[in-house]
Amino acid sequence: MAKRSSAEAVAWLLFSAGGVVSALLVPVLLLLVGVLFPLGQLVPTHAHLLAVLSHPLATVVLLGLCVLSLLHWAHRFRYTLSDGLRLRRLSVPINLLCYGAAVAGSVWAVIVLF
Image (cartoon, rainbow, N blue to C red; front, side, top):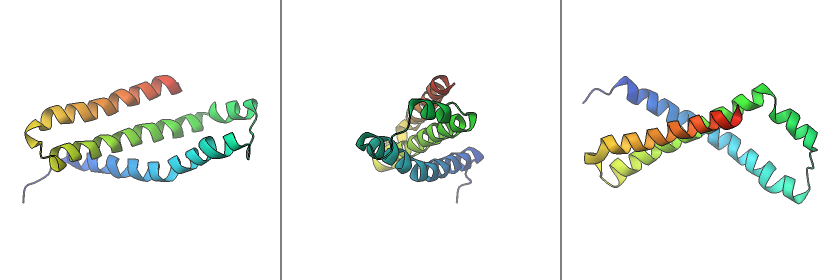
């Protein structure tokens, strides 16, 4: 059995953390922003939403959601391409593309949120 690198363990840790955070927070956000607010069931004022979203903890939570979801996507897409489509010979460009896109998206999220 081949010994796995510690970088692979970190990648799997971030994959599972992203999956859990996405599974817990995204449905709540979709329910609020996609259903309840448009239907008028909850009608927050502009001042209230601004106060909630300008709180540092809310910014950190949104940033964590974005970063962990992107890392979850990158790891899942990488394994889909390399194992599912059997493109193992292109593992270096696939890794650079997937994780590079996740890092670029994370940097963009930092710029937008801060």
